[in-house]
Amino acid sequence: MAQTSSKVMTSSPAARPAICIDVVYTLSSRITASSGDLLPRTSSHPKEENFNFRVSADLKAAFKAATEAADRPAAQVIRDFMRAYVEERQKPEPGYDAWFRAQVQAAIDDPRPSIPHDRVMADVKARLQARIAKAAGRAR
Image 1 (cartoon, rainbow, N blue to C red):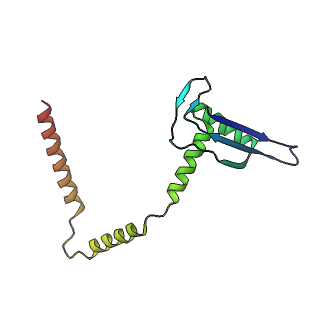
Image 2: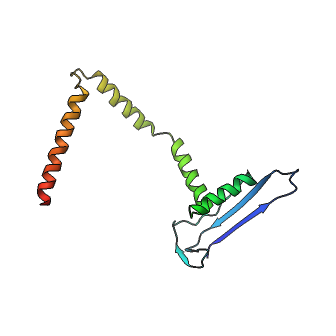
Image 3: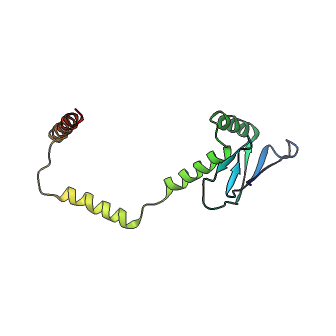
């Protein structure tokens, strides 16, 4: 069974204006929904990590309301955000960057005359129309 615990530690508002959230997720082969039904596991690797951070009570309440309205667990939304954030900031492989720059430079240095945009677009449109007509003929 999955173990999910959430502890909210608070003290007097004057001493601590934010709420500290400590969430531990342990996924076994299956997890239980709030209704008691077993749900399939979404990952083949059990996860058990703690990530503590402070947020204001208002932000926590608004986030909880938004995730409940979207019928998504708050933790899943946070994990999705973290993955997207990391993926967005990953640097491309150095080999790819060098290859891409070489391709751009080769296009710039190409001695052949450029093709006007309107001509290229007309050619693409004609090709698309021909493929559509061919597909429509096969569909009949």
